[in-house]
Length: 120
Image (cartoon, rainbow, N blue to C red; front, side, top):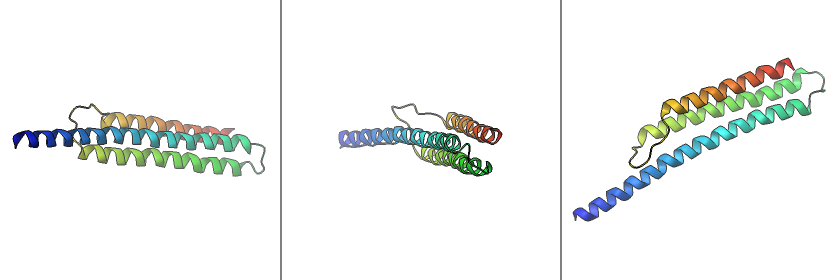
């Protein structure tokens, strides 16, 4: 009976490790989605640059910058919440601190891009 329990526990540990790694992939996917929103903001601003009044394309681009920041922080919150509930066994995942740093840097970059859009 002990061998069966050990095998079951080992399989459960592997499943939990896969979930930890899937959480990281999901976090990375949401970061890419946020960056795509920033790229869309830049593209809209470039496409509608000569549009009058000039504040209209800037405002639309700013909406996508805001969406990007919201995506970054929602991904961070969900990823950290999931990571707290998981135990690592044979994997080494990103720490909550590293995900916070990544989220902060991408958010700062998105906000700086939004500010620059208003000066163009």
